[in-house]
Length: 183
Image: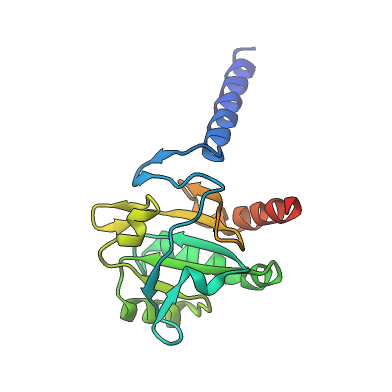
């Protein structure tokens, strides 16, 4: 009997935590204040390992954007997260969504990381953390593991804090499905 109560309490806590995490209200998280759901996502232009050197959020107008921040290239969690996004890249494209990664690493490090892992999506370099700070994803000298879904109109549609790299891409795809079903 006590075990059931404990399980119910744990489930209640998990549900409360989950509703807080996806709440449309402004949130404060490790890294800073989060952009409220439905508000314009902060614009940015950063150097990229792909294409002509720089990528802006405006380049993806009329597309969904999965903007994920991560601490460092070549670390275990960041590698797993990138591999999962790459594994699912065709599913993102089918949903008219572009995956974009941001960290404080250099463009050169990003290029090596993409070559090493076979990544097709762009990684952007934010060495001083200006964009990471604007999104509330900066701590000290690195980006935190946060992900944002930005709608085709440039507004914040969802956020993921406290990401688990192994399952994260599937969570994002499920959220995209829900968001696109509503629009």
